[in-house]
Amino acid sequence: MKLDLTGLRIEVTDGIRSYVEKKVEKLAKFFDEDTICHVTFTDSVKGKNHVDIRIEYKSRTYMAEEDTEDLYTVMDDLVSKIEGQIRKDKAIAEKKRKETIEHPNVDDVETLLDDDE
Image (tube, rainbow, N blue to C red):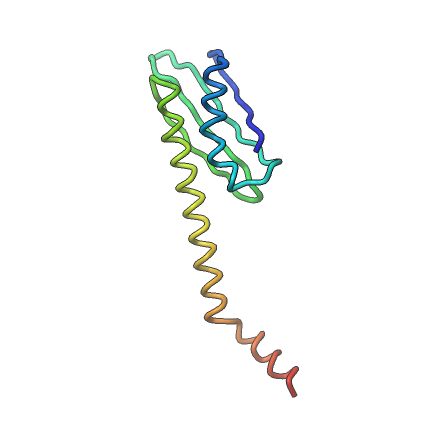
């Protein structure tokens, strides 16, 4: 997985970069090598920073965002949110797959029966 870090009105230091790489590496097992993970840090005037993660994979976009005072602690929460979205999608796909196996399309069954004759 490729990582794209952007800082808006804030400098992305080497420490932040290495910490984000370490945390986002947990998500790499779910995606291809060519998938790009966009992490954006925005400095706010009100004292809190805005951090968002966006991963576009196939036809799905996984996104998590949060306002925080500490850029390091928020990364755990954002990665957990993305993992939750992935697990939810995986559960839905598994449920659809099981329903298809249990209840095949009637036309497909008729075609199979006609072929046997």
